[in-house]
Length: 109
Image (cartoon, rainbow, N blue to C red; front, top):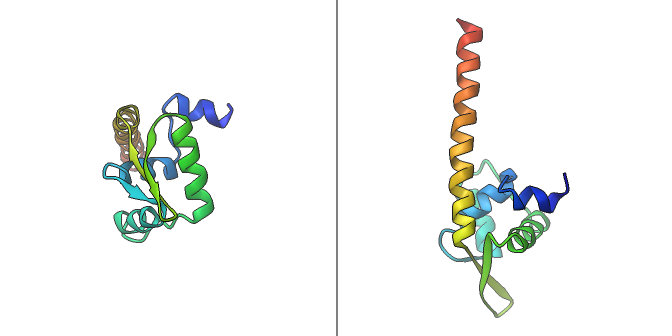
């Protein structure tokens, strides 16, 4: 499946998921990298190449928009469509975690 189709169908990579969750409040790129690292208690570090590739794809999928640009910084924010995709993804990931937990419980039972 081509990458753009992946985003168009609302299926998010882990990086895209974390970027969307971080853009509930507007943010620029460098701050976004710090925000994700803080949100994940240091478990996830996203480098500039991954971040800006993801921002481009999320923008092309209309999940985020550029709010303003200036002083070498672009400030992004989640769109209504992106918020819906994030909510769907959260629900899906919660269900999948439940599937995994049940499988572990059954395997250890």
